[in-house]
Amino acid sequence: MKKKESPAKKDIFFQRFLNGVERVGNRLPHPITLFVLFSAAIAVVSAVCALFDVSAVGEIIDPVTMELTQQKISAVSLLTREGLSNMLTSAVTNFTSFAPLGVVLVTMLGVGCAEGSGYLSALLCRAALSAPRALLTPALVFLGVMSNLASDIGYVVLIPIGAMIFQAVGRHPIAGLAAAFSGVSGGFSANLLIGTIDPMLAGISTESAHMIDPNYTVLATDNWFFMVASTFLIVWIGTFVTDHIVEPRLAPVAYAKPKAISREISPQEKKALRWANWSMAAIILLLILCCLPQDSFLRNPETGSLLENAPLIHGLIPLIALVFFVPSLVFGWISGKYRSEKDVCAQLGESMSSMGSYIALSFFAAQLIHFFSYTQLGTILALKGAEWLGSSQIPGPVLMVLFLLFSALINLVMGSASAKWTILAPVFVPMFMLLGYSPQLTQVAYRIGDSCTNLITPLMAYFAMIVVFAKKYDPSCGIGTIIATMIPYTLWFLVGWSALLILWMLLGWPLGPGAGIFL
Picture 1 (cartoon, rainbow, N blue to C red):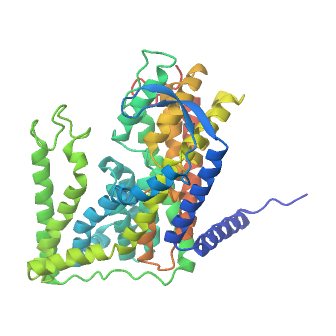
Picture 2: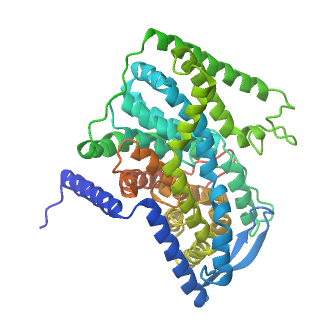
Picture 3: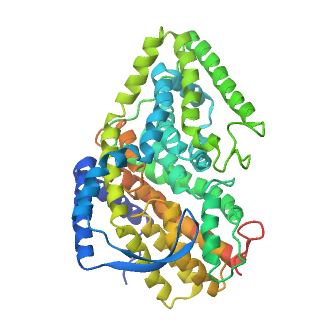
């Protein structure tokens, strides 16, 4: 009889697997070269698919008009006159309209200045002295999950700060980066509050449900109970994976033992830190006061909302930059780092120059994502997969889990959560309704799959930025390092979140106020 493999051997096998992924990934060409090769491959594949008239037909919701229309999606070749012309004429706009680029650079004007002035180091030093070590990881993952309320701020602010915080307490900075990344991106759908993605997905689900019941409505709050529970699950899993899988694996192969930021603060720096913190508090208080009037310029002029299509949300990036910039000025002036406005301007330039590699990487990443969208290959894959899954004679609960895994797989080739749902919802919402399951349940299953694989797909818009941040602490770090580091989070999130969904279905708990599992 074959002996059962011990947990220790299984753990060694898993570590070897991750090391293998990292080695293979890092032996690949430079990320810029890799994006160029991927783009060339897409061009060739699109030409072949267009030659053989590869297409898919499906009900798709227009994200603007929210109307359901049957469309035939055909592969579009990049190697035609029109395709080559598009590649040439759209290159600049692809780059300048690449969403993460502006977000990262504007935020770095504030965060980079805060780091260069010494304010961020002093603040982290004080936090390292006062924060309980045991709560550091769960707090970082939790803040990552909650940061999704503030659009993409978690990617450009919390993730690099997570690395700094871990370094400040003598822990591996890549582990801190991974913990924050797991909360921000892997826990994208979890939250204690209703975010901007909830009404967007609910609107698409409502239109899809109308194919079966014209009076059915899915509300933004219909997944709230499940997402609140998911927040605590993601924090627990993220903490466990960081402390027991990711960081122990990083320590033996690190370039060197991470050096903790000096915890010694001079009296002058203490004074500067105190005044800088007060200035930050004053800025935040001023913003809160500006939000209070019903006719505030930060509110939606039509609805008065502070969240939905409001200047507060759309202008959050420069506001965050301002919140960091003002206290960094105060700290730099009092500590003596800044003696004139020329020093401040020089620091702003230095902050931008440090992002040079990311800017170059963004140009090629933007082209790759545009090519994949232009050729319609991702949409065809989604429609073909949905057609196959929907026609399979599989029991409802098993099919629901397979749909979750299918959503996770499609997320590897399509980035936007709302764009994928406009394709998948018209297929799966009516199908599961005919099986007796509510649209709210189908939406939950989709959101789980859509979140978990965010961490390991290079097509995720901010993935290139994560690689650049990691290289600051380990110059040898590449795409393989990040994927190998984040695979444990993806696997544990998929297993844990799926188990929570199955348990929720078995117990028949409501997914949100008045939103049940079954019709």
